[in-house]
Every structure is written in structure tokens, then in C-alpha cells.
Length: 131
Length: 65
Length: 381
Image (cartoon, rainbow over all chains, first blue to last red; front, side, top):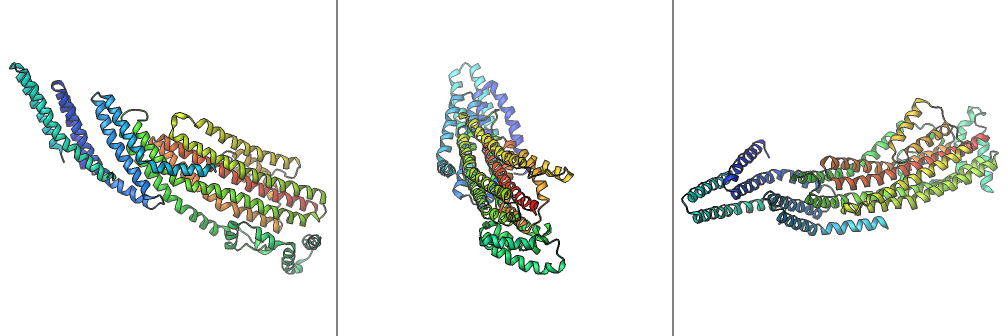
């Protein structure tokens, strides 16, 4: 991500903050919507900027002998955590802690299901250690 | 970038707020409520497209197909 | 009986050596070779552990040769050592890069949360990254464990044939009683220590690692106390074993303590600080060995020490490289704030550290016993 993109995102963040604060006095639900959309837009920019990092990490991993499936699991888990964190934070910001907790639970379950083969692998390792 | 989307939503928010105040002063609270609801729904529709965009980006970057 | 006769003949050549004039030295090599062959040097060479054999052949030291051993300088070791080092470091460094990349991803996720303390999602992701790192690191660690066990057992096996042959040459010099006693003592100690270390301590460390792995998935279960209990017990037991050995030898007043030169003090300090868990005891044992090592003169004894060195060095380098790698990645995890990842990596480095201590312990044991037998023999002639 170049520095100019960073400036854009920073500017967007500041401006939307002011708008949200202004709107909160009149229509609080709009303030919430504005902040939510600002968050989404900023995160799109961030995720686009992470792409080169992700590719670099993938090339590093390919040179070791870790199977590619595990690497995919890691990245999928990262993506799931990202999304769930966004939703969770937004819910908590809006004061709906309960909904946020449920979304978090859904995210944790998804990560667990995705990483099941890794668990099996580690269990075989532990069994090998105990023999 | 989709920054104009934010400004559009903020603009809708301000318009709705003003309209709400005006309509309330004009003794039409129910129209005021309906305007607010209409504004919220419009903004939501705009937002859903944006959230979909976010999901697509995350899917492609992290390989979440 | 035949062996005794041959040993006697060998000694007739060996001991009067300083008295004879130069004209017999040329003849000496050939005669020594003949005597060594008769003495069963072939069989000894067959017992040399696999790893040592390669490196000895590379450094051109495989045959027990008086001349080659006499002109042994550190300079000859360094090319072989250097190559050994580079071969060991290459592949683990790629795994190091991969593990640092995983910690980078953890850092990415950590930066997203806004509350202090571990948010549940970063915990979930850290668990997945712990799994990934474990699959990368577990095979090398198991490899280290197996290699250390094998090396210790091979070295013990080598000593089994080395000590009798050597003290058979020395006993006939005139101290049969003490010679035989030391022979038996050293043999039994070597075997006992190698068996205890290989069959008890190292599997216990494997159990410790298994505990830590399971504990990292459920931090609330607080497996850490049990795990650290196991670990302190193992390091305490190893220290005890080594202390007993050194104390027994000192009581027999076989080992005089070397003078406290600057070099000796430096080496003692280094061993104390670098070797984990049993460093202080090892540095004391090193002091005791100092006095013995100065008297290393005989061919076969020096050969035994060279074999011990080359046997342990590759394994030691391999384990040390992985120890450093796990320490570095644990540090990175600490910096980033990924506690689970750094916790499991610290457990791994503890296991590797104890393996290093076991290697050092046993190598020092071999060197001390070799020197002791030599002193026993030389003290008579």
C-alpha cells in the first residue's frame, strides 16, 4: 500500500468521524450507518494493501516442506477472523454486545471446523512423542 | 475509491435530519418517521453493495472460496 | 591370553620410547601398526559410530596413526567443521523464515483488536498458527531427540570396546589392581549414565513437550505447573548424576584440578552461562578434566577423544541450531503479543536445551574417563 493511499484512508477516517459526531445529535442511527460504511471502505483499502504481503508470505511458505493445505487453512482462518472481528466491533460499538458475542461464536466455530485436519496432524505428533 | 459513497450517505443523513426537524415543526410527525425510515432503508441498500464488495475482496485475498 | 602377550610386546615398544635414540623411530611406526592390528584395532575401528566415521575419513584420521595424530592441528579440523556447520544450517533457516511469517500474520490480527487482553478471535487464530508451527517444528524436534538418543547409545557402545582395549594395554604396565578397578568403574558408569539418559530422561522430556502442546490449546487448564515440574526434575536428576560421577572421581584423587589460568576461567564461565540447566556442574567437571587433559599423550587415548568429539559434534550442531531457531521465534512471538505461540515455542526450546545439556554431559563423561584411564596407566610407567 503506497503512502498516498494511506493518506486517503486517514482523511476518510477523520472526516467520517466528524460527520458521525454531528449526525449523532439529530439522527443517531445515521451516525451508526456512516461509521459502519466508513469502516467497510477503509478495510477494503487495507485488505487490498495487504495483498503483496500475503503473496510474499505464500512464497516463503512454499520453500519449506509444510504442505500447501496447512498454509491455506492458516490464510482462511485469518480471513474469517478478520471478518468476524469487523462485525463484532461494529455490534459492540452500536451497544449490541449480545449480538456481537453471537457473531464471535460463529467465527470461532468456523475457524475450528476449518482447522480440523491440522488438529488431527498435531494429535498424531503428540502420540509419536508419547511412544 | 468509494469515498463518495460515504459522502452520499452523510448527505442523505443530513437531509433526513433536516426534513425530520422541519416536518415535526410542521406538525406531521408520522411523515417525519416515514422519511427517516425511507432514508435508513436507502442507506442500507447502498451499504449492502459495499459490504458485498468487502466480502469479495477478503475472499480473493485470503482464498476463502 | 594371546591378547595379553601382544599387549606386553606393545608395551615393550611403547614405554622405552623416550630412552631409545632416533634411529628406532622410523621403525616404530611400522611396528606400532603391526601391534595395533594385533591388538584388535580393526575391531575398534568397526565400533566407531557412523557419524564420526564420515568426518574422520574426511579429515583423514580414520586409521590409528601415530604420525597423523602427532601432527594434528586445529587448522585441519576447520574445513570439515565449517562444511558441517553450513550443511546443518541451510534447511532449518527456511523453516525459521516460515515461522516468522506466521508470527507476522498473528501480529496482523493482533493489531485489529482494540481492547486490552486477548480477544477470543485472536485466541482462535493463535491456536491455528500454533498448529501450523507445530507441524513445521515437530519433525525436526523428534529428529533431534532420536539423533541424541542414538548418538549417546553409539558412543556408549564405542566406549564398551575402547576402554577394555586401552586399559588392557595399560594394566600390564604394572598396576593390575587399580587398573582393573578403574576399568570396571568407568565402564559401568558410562553404561549406566547412557542408559539412564537415553531411556529415562529423554522420553520424559518428550512427555513434557506433549503436555505443553496440549496445554497450549486450553490455557485455562494451567498445565504449565505440571510441565515445569517435570522439567526441573529432569534437569535436577541430570545434574545429580554428573555431580556424583565427578565427586567419585575426585575422591579417588585421580583428577587434580588444573591451575586457574585466564583461559580456563573463561572456558568455565562460557560453559556455565551457555549450557542450559546443568551449566554450573559442567563447568566444575570441566575444571576437573583440565588437569587430566594436559596429560593426554598416548596415541590410542587421543584417538578416543577425537572420535568422541566427532561423534557428538554433528548432533550437537543440529540440536543447537534448532534451539536457537525456536528461541528466536519465541522472542518474536513475545514482541508481537502472541502468547500461545511463544509459550509453545519456549517449551520446545526447553526440550532442545536439555538435549544439549545431555550431549555435553555425556561427551565430557567420555573425555574424563579416557583421560583417567590414561593417567592410571601413565602413572604406573
